[in-house]
Length: 148
Image (cartoon, rainbow, N blue to C red; front, side, top):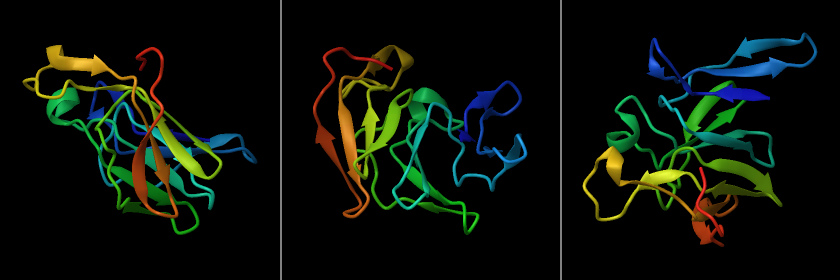
């Protein structure tokens, strides 16, 4: 169980990560992520590494919207940037691993072709799937209802 990024009043988006130690019943600090991320999502890859997807950084949901991803290797206690970027930057999305693939579902993003303002945010129907063996994101079926 991981608590990844997020935000608070003191520092806004966080780059901190904590892992729950089930043996001792306490949270353990992990190395900081490469980027500050709020509104991101995460899922475990088949090899046990943590894959953190999207969100936004300290510049906010308009200027700081992220299409980048990063990977945490708990055995090495190290982060690395993921090679592939989301097809569409998003925050507030869901993320899960199924059948060895990682899915990023819904969320919010800037409306294409609109000026970069919060008023031009839209809730997404789109979903993307990441194949760790190919290291690429691809579109997959859309949600019936936009959601974040």
